[in-house]
Image (cartoon, rainbow, N blue to C red):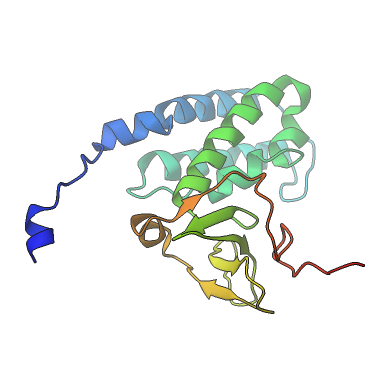
Length: 192
């Protein structure tokens, strides 16, 4: 009780400061540029869309969701603008730089506000990697494989990224070398 009353509180960012830190306004501006550029393309085909027009309609809806939802989900935009995905299929070299900017910003949001499979994390001096488990829903990750000698040391953090960061959890340098596990969470084999 004493600590709670007299503990020095950290200054929280305002919503606008938070958006500026994660370049939200720049992301929205780039998404509108992408929508305008995509409106000029006709036909084509990619994995999820039969034409540029279909992708254009979906992109408009995706932009609206990100721009106006109270808690935006960047997963769809992140997937579309990932290298060699939908955006690259339709925009090609003409939209390469714009697509990379959008992907980098959504990737930054995802990695700082959501668990992403393959991301290396740390909490309380322990290191681990986010893995995909059978229990995970599509586009929702949170199972952490900890870097321990145990055969299967996993912990379910699905939907609790905020809690994870509040207790000191953080995303670490993705070049970190694990002692007992590989980057994909599988156990390292000892070779003679």
